[in-house]
Length: 217
Ligand code: G16
Ligand code: MG
Image (cartoon, rainbow, N blue to C red):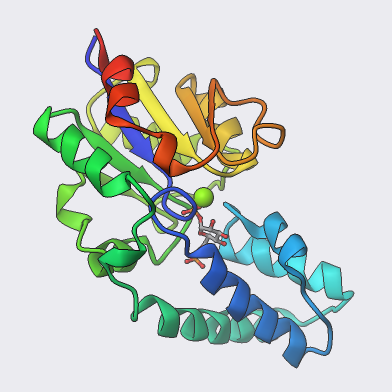
């Protein structure tokens, strides 16, 4: 039966991870410890609150709740300074073509992201009107690897999980897709994303040919 697609945002449509990293690194440095790019891998696909917990744990820092809320706001404001400078040139290779092809074929697709800034980012990239549905960090109560975000997306697309194909770059996201009973495509290191149904090294490998294969009924 008819397929539907669900796209993760960071690492699949755009590389916002580099901006998250700059903002978290500044926060860590202000608190007196370093934060490496390797450690940043732990924050990919993870919610903002959980990211802060992981970061503070790395620095061995304990903070009262209201201070955590304050520094999360500061981090987000810093992050938004980068985000508001973004344009279509930052869309990851091949992804704009894929979205336009699906649109042309009237294959429905949704966003399935942990980010609370997802709508702003899609606006910046001028992609927001292409999406049939958007499910992001404002719509879910349980973060990936919980399948909630993808199950809501399937519902919004008026389809069932077994008809959905999820494109993800994070372990937690691939896991969420698998738990939801959806087809998972992992973008990135295939040893890291070994639970995915299909592995691609980068978005440039998600070709129109592959899409055609995936949507064959
Ligand atoms: C993205 C990033 C995560 C980030 C999360 C929350 O998720 O991968 O690193 O912590 O969003 O972002 P925000 O602070 O904007 O709410 P995804 O699911 O799009 O990969
Ligand atoms: Mg991601």
